[in-house]
Length: 138
Image 1 (cartoon, helix red, strand yellow):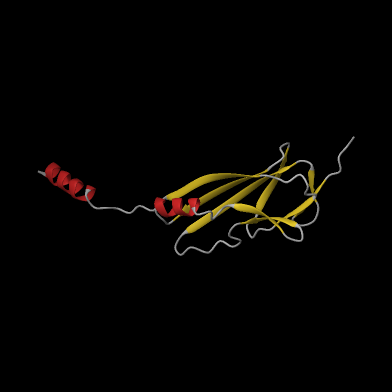
Image 2 (image 1 turned 90 degrees about the vertical axis):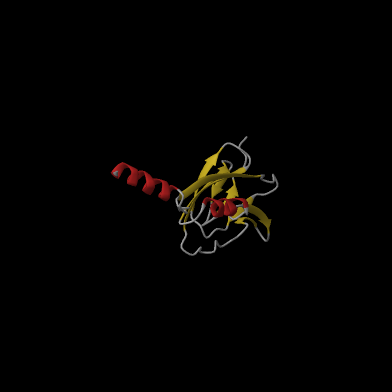
């Protein structure tokens, strides 16, 4: 008798639509072609980032996003909506900026963003967020 009651309870609970809110995470890669004519550029970001120098000629961005307190569909929407994309802007000095400079706080959602920027090794870090091209060696 008790086994039948447990079976009925299990069957009943399996039909209740649970909206589980798990933690979602994804790593986004973006390559930004670097114009050969630029001798200096700045990085303008409200999000902290790590810089790594590499032998390539483009800037590679590796953005790790983790989000909890929401559905997977909402998380995927933020990924495809360019919330974490970057662009080169040619102002008084060329600047690498996020498409959305400030990420709006999301109610009841925890969002963590970690960024690694791979910068061509022929640049050196000058001031706060300015990178200057090294002179070519003969």
